[in-house]
Length: 553
Image (tube, rainbow, N blue to C red):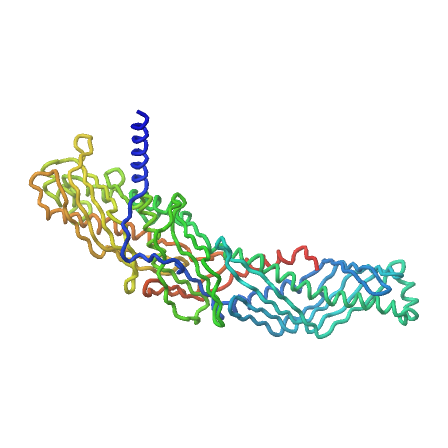
């Protein structure tokens, strides 16, 4: 008895497993070899020079306004051990760098340099060293300061981007700071200064203050530039690692059909792109390029995609500032997971069609419809007379189920989706949904992608569609009449889905950059989006201001 119960439990478990996960026959064209990216993003010399130009200008704004900062440093020499506090340091005059440069350095570095900056500043000080304890004011300048910085980029085990600044150095042409003692000891020090100035400890004490400031100010530049790059660059890369699509399809104003609205809403629910980095970036003398996973899937499905991107043979293009390359793996991974989670089915009936198309599912056409109004005058009973004869004055419903996994390929100037669909036809037989036909549709939908108005969208058109009858419960059914169902797709489903596709999704990094004259091209197995861009100065200015806030130099 226990053995029978166990066998029954195992049988039920098997049935549930088969039901939950669709069985997929492997496509002959699937790439089973991992290692290729589904997405490449390339920043060129032209692009990074624009970032550098804007960044340096905003950095100059911030440096010229620095004030109210403090620091402390230790002085240690034979005969003098102590410290110096600098308070309320502010910039009096700032001459921006005469030259600023940025270069790519293979295999994984970016080098940044600022040459010949001049800074005049003042502040208050308190020094304590051996026999000397004095406070007062200090003013002076650093002339001809040059900063050189190297940033290193590498992917992490969890697919993010790590950015480190292993080296930052400064060179100063000359500097000098005047010490102006104040406070109770100020007059005494000033009176004794001619005598003390010859004292080796006095000269050493004031020399150490000068030397400390000389090193602290350049050190501040390196520290803050390092912080700006190491903290903010990974955040920018992280925005590209995952994008959720559902939020971009909240407005269905372009779609007037309730059934298509529901289909699109269900289709995008939980959809996201997994764009983790699969290897370290490629750095050449002309560009910086990341290689990313490029897999579109759903939150509700953890099943791995059973195939991988094919190689994208991209040219060494660098005329534009930024390039995005997307493999057909983007679309095929989406179709796979949509198929596995049952997001490709559509049910059409009188309750979910708009008024314009509701008459189509009737078995008897509306005789009062205007002759020129094709969508109102046509009905399924007119297209397939056997339905009208067997079930007059009622309505039909259709369930469209994918029969096999759709396949997407870039073909010429557009993308093409090969479709195979089962069409189950029901009739309302006195309140009971009765199945009367099973047919299939084989065809191809062409997808023409476009980049415009800050979004990546497209247009969908059913290029060819062949409908075939498999079985029917209708007497005298002419198998060839089933071909009349083609208008159901070409005049209703196709155009409505096309409206949703035209809405598209915003360009990447829309909060950080604005694309300028983007151009979208279809290549062999991938698409290429090439664009120039304008940096969002307000966003970058905010980051620089935050970096220099509460500065500790």
